[in-house]
Length: 439
Image (cartoon, rainbow, N blue to C red; front, side, top):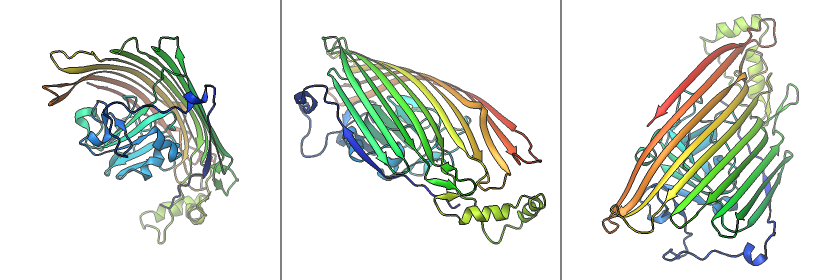
């Protein structure tokens, strides 16, 4: 298959809203006691369900801090696939809201509800069940971790290839704000904003709100009608509330949403000579009906990488909503189990996805895939209890957990033959309903 994947070059203009005295805005945090300072950046990870320095974790982990992501001007997780060995993080061909994630060759690209990912993706400790979930932009992220698999012991289901752990920035007990602007070719622009406000004067509660918007015209032109593909219109936001009444207790409530509208890039129709003998009778029959697939496929195949010949202006739209509540208790004194930390996570997520896709990727009106009238609707609920600690003079590190997961998904895939012609079959639905429960 001949295809092209291209990303517009963007120049990032960083602006910091100095709504607080400069001495606060530019102050650097003092490294905690015992932190290493041999010139290696200190990155804290949770690869083993506990906060540890990256260099102390006896596992194959690649981690990026908030500063790393800013230096690389990373917009989406796909870009980190070029920086992490053994990680392939791309979109499914022709689809803008379905992630194809592989680690060491293990993964999954079938986005139907009956297929689960081979690489688990976690956002603030919450498992994202569907392939269309991990296609969001990275903004206000504290760290991005890639754990090569298998990771079933610590992360559970669907982590044979490994796990990707994304942690957003928690609300801080001090005021801060930030604004990033992006401009690029193909009329691309983007804005990311964040504001963090402490609540009250006791340094026990804070709220943090972040939002991003990104828009870009397509770089791929349809030579049939001049329409554009590879366009994006995205709006995402997150609101987090943190309450720490004491040194032992901490509560976090996070809500996020994503609205994404796009016409994803289109691959070229595959054309080869000679034609497979088994396919020639079908091609000849279609030509007798006025559908010259061979000619239309040749036009698509021989077009430039930034051009395509297609009869359907596709769309790939998604709406995602999520809510997560976390409570953590870390007693200051050691008990019978030594140093212990207890954490609970409750979450709810929902996504609705619509799609219009030209299957044969040519201007011949032969087959179209539609998820329009009844969008893919997926809801998931999770509950988790984690108990981590150290005992026997720190010679024993332990992790104990209980986990519950429930998912309901509805998927109606409509296939339409000869759309818009006298032979139009109308939508032929293929419905899938899936219900999953894990413990």
